[in-house]
Image 1 (cartoon, rainbow, N blue to C red):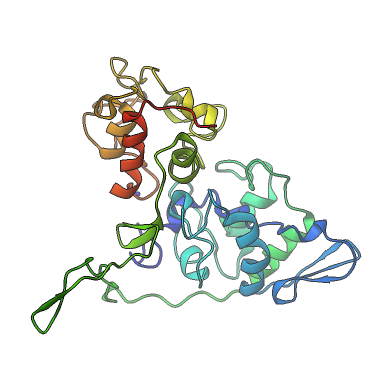
Image 2 (tube, rainbow, N blue to C red):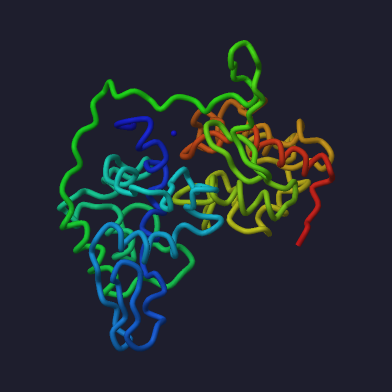
Length: 315
């Protein structure tokens, strides 16, 4: 959880199984002649393709994929941000971790995982996208193919390109010998590694929607009829079913033990402590999420607080 460059392709490899969600931006639901962002349009109910990166992102990626619990800049499912600027820097430089194909191989749509995932019922790796929604129309798939085919390969990044560096510490800047208190995050935000995110409430719904579903329930992980290790996390029902339920890796420890976060195996896996030595398949048991960035303290702490408060269902 091999990147070409740590700054520009960190998240995208983890997620590729989801990237293809960039499909039908709701344009097909329009009637008459309506202008869409960057010139995409619906002409008499038929999708009109504008195969530019700006239009693909504005008309398809953002409205269909960058939702609150998916690939937004705020809560990045599987580490894949489709909302921020320059999407090609995140999807056209690397390969999926789950699959061997490049997410987007400029100039070659037949070899791009993104195209396979939205075009075929069986894409050869994982499941068709968008997950839980109607497949893209033929016109929308063709537009994505046309866009990928029109792209030119991005220049190779130099190996010695400097990293952007960490965010300044809050309250640690010196000005002529005087300490200047400075909070790098705004009101209602908290620091998560090098980013600022909205504070996550210690409730079941917030923990599911903003932490577990985006980071764990994608691709070949904890989703579907046969989730990894028998552990589903895609729905709220999946989460609440873990309360007082023994872990399959460590049956003597419940996945969620109300009132005791330290004894809850869900927390153990997130922190990488007190885990079983082996998974059910005999592989080494690893800290989770495996195919997405390790959770920062601002995401683990709400889980622990929710469990400490009794792991209640707030629906």
